[in-house]
Image (cartoon, rainbow, N blue to C red):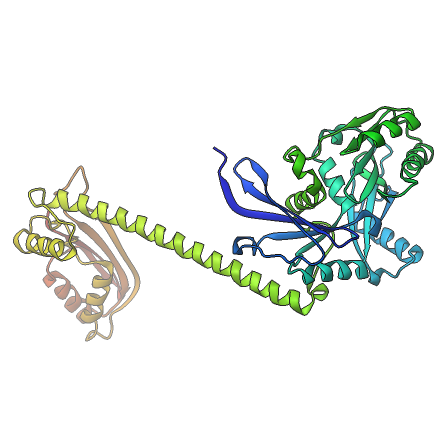
Length: 459
């Protein structure tokens, strides 16, 4: 089954008549599907459910507001390549770079050991105007894109990406966009109004231009959503067939009027940064309040999900601990039955502990530990001022094991140091009187002694 997830991406477009079209994609287990389309007139207002509040909203500007420029170079350093391109653009552009919003796509290396960077440029004034018109209707964009970039992104997901060179024409609701793509990079992008009387001539001029400038031999034109009249005339005048490609198979015939918004939504799905940067400096005060509200909503959902995960994890861990405790209790007291009520279970365990001590482990260490031995030696020599130690070794030689459960414990202690005869004799007497200690050897020469002791525990 194709389960639907509460994840959405929203594409928004605006026409010259300030008609807003919205397409909402929903994440499913098999991909993305179109779940909702909406059209707003100039006086309409948005009213979205809260589930869309944390979604990405991509506002796509028309292609006529976008300037596309391509530059090729053999520089291997991406950083140096982009520096050169931006420096050249700053020197030749009609607008200062600070008035432009620029995004770039860096292509792959071609057969001439060059790669192309495509610059997509918008005026900040155009972005501000488009977002302001959307905010008047209660909508707020989180990302900015453009029609040409949306189409190129869709083409990169279609079968046309396997072609080295192609000329593509897309007929939108308000404008027709043509793209010339060579080796994965857009070398030409032009947009024309659909109601322009010179639309066909402009498309033919663009087709002839790319063949002349880029010495490309094009045997067909690819298109999408072209009217039958435009397709027929374009094929007849250009002298090549026009092959129609289906960019968005999800659209039904009555949903095709939202294809521009669908392209913007898919652009938001495929790119984490979408097309153009859209930062705090571009937000209006009204948009900032919406952004804060959106962040708070996202954080609240994240907090709820975290609390739910902790609750489920804690419950599972508690069940595992209860199951383990029941297993241990059945091993200790198989004749007793423990209940699920905490106080009753606590009383049963107390009764078992008070009445039966057979479960206690009998083979706890029965020889002094290393720490205990050092404390005893310290007390023994406290009143023997001439006794000092230069070497001390504690070695546990034998402990009970599965093969020898009654083997007992055995430890050896090696002591070396200095002492006079009287203090040394007193020290040896105390060691011999120590319970569990057996002096294996002792030697004193030139006030230097060497003593070895064995500690034997019960088996």
